[in-house]
Image (cartoon, rainbow, N blue to C red; front, side, top):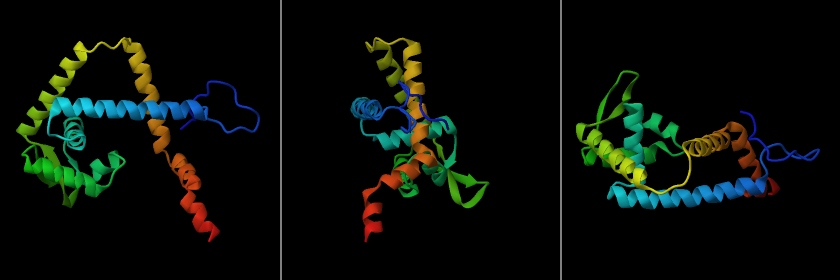
Length: 177
């Protein structure tokens, strides 16, 4: 993946990539938006947590999936996804099916109640967004979404994981010992 574009030309010898202060500001704003969206979703969708809703939406969009596959699609553990799936099964929103690709790892799929729950959530969200007073054009929203997708992809890339590992102070402490 190519580095994110810079707002200005780098100085000779400077690292490539976006300017750090602007990227940090984007991270802070994204975190604040995440918390705002989380509170809005909780108010709209009641007892289903963000994690439960995320699994439901993932199954609605991607069809039946194994728990390990769902975990690989998110930066979370298989065990965490299994806890969420178990809760959704208790609620009658998902069921398990045989997996033709694996003897032990079942596929998780939406039940008819799960499909209705997803449709109901999507309808509530669509209705709310149609009434929201957000002064952005479709093109501006599309550009913002594209920027966030590119940043997320860069942060999930193996090259960035190595940078994070190199910056981990625990790693330096262990090498000094």
